[in-house]
Length: 207
Image 1 (cartoon, rainbow, N blue to C red):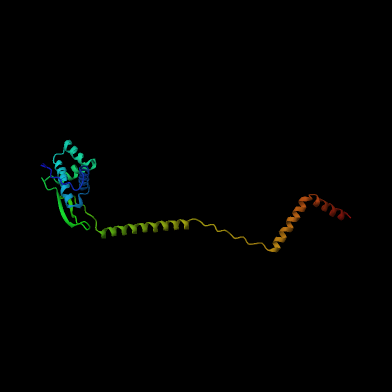
Image 2 (tube, rainbow, N blue to C red; image 1 turned 180 degrees about the vertical axis):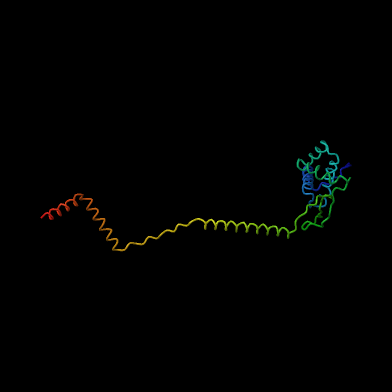
């Protein structure tokens, strides 16, 4: 006889169903709101409400019982530190199921499973986000302009040395330089040539 066997099988084997229910409980505690089928939402609701009931007595034993289901220390801390105080004034009704209609394809009834009390997180509207982005872009553009001006001022302060272009020598100057070089070479090759010339001029003067 199946007395006290009211669990839904959900078309799964026992081990698969238990693992699935634990994952559902983890997701609800982590995200505080999930979308699933109506049968799965009703079945996982029982486990989640038992976990939240454990937070009424914050002891080592109750934390270990929660860890046996969640197998995650961070989720256990969130369950007892964040979610527990939210439901301190409640004795039951920790979750709600909101039907959504039928799923397109197989026609399964869908629902939202969420916690009745949640932290309200204020989100900035899109206009404020756009303004903040525009202000950031403007500030970045101003900084870039300042950097460009500083670089230009540095370039102006630095003295610039202009290179004086060398003019090309004319043909007459080149010939004159070549003649002077040739004469220098001759004089270097005959060091006594100038002395001999002086001696000749002296002899002619004596005559």
